Amino acid sequence: MSSADVCAAILWVGVTLYAIFGGADFGAGIWDFLAGSGERADKVRAQIDRSIGPVWEANHVWLIFVLVILWTAFSPAFSAIFSTLYIPLALAALGIVLRGSGFAFRHALPGPVERPATRIFGLASILTPFFMGTVVGAIAAGQVPADGDGDPTGSWIGFLPLSLGALFVLLTAYTAAVFLVRDSGAAGEQELRDYFERRALGAAVLAGAAAVVGLIALHADARYVYDGLTSWPGIALVIISGLCGLIALGLLVSGRNYGLRVAAVGAGTAVIWGYFAAAFPYLLPTSLKISDAAAPSATLTAVIVVFGAAVLVVIPSLALLYTLSQRQALEGYTASSDASSPRR
Image (tube, rainbow, N blue to C red; front, side, top):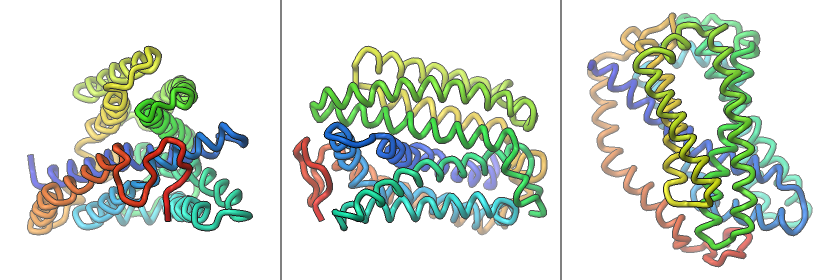
């Protein structure tokens, strides 16, 4: 394996971590948006706050990581993607800013600002993964030429980009619901656990249907990726994803928390790496190979060394953050199950 391939794998590690943790963050915002009003809605939003409040900023570290690695190690791909897909990328970035502002303002400024801030937080949580999905769809469909001279409007509004946008929204909702099932169960909130369990099951069914549509779109508009997913090793990862999904559904229906998140995360991770395997050796399918987009050897070596240092320093720190959050042990946050928001 070349140093360029190693850096591509590092890039995909960052993509995976952002898709899982950032995706769960977006999905929680979707359920916040759909919670409605009344006493039960207040309990739902309180649980969402307890789950994502301590870590919602840390989850977006992975997006910065992905952008830095792409820019440093594969600058031609970075240039091509941002030159062609700047509209959906800008809309996704705007959504990230709006949802962060909405989440902060609804806690810092209770009263008249709270309700519109909550709506902005929820709506942006839907729009951001949708536009990110359209970006992935446009890349998979070969709508991003290596020279960056792609269509800035038509490239991301085709059948495949739009179907993947919808799929991304449903997958983030499903992942978040699974995480919230576990958190509610661990907190002894059986009513909330049942609430999120029903929504996880519903999201799983809709995501499954959207995945079928996505496969049809891949067959029609991204044949190279489709062929990669239906042959070795892509097909193995697709099968693993399906098995993990079935295990997660079984755990949901049986009311068990142990292993639930692992199964759900395994399903998502297998799909993400299935795409990597299907597109390999291309970064931009059929137009730009990993080897052609790679930076000079010295730069790639520096990226690998920095990644190794990050594994030793950053990963344990984030693992500690997530562990303390799960145990409700972070200073400044309530530990009782009926707390509605972080203390400021």
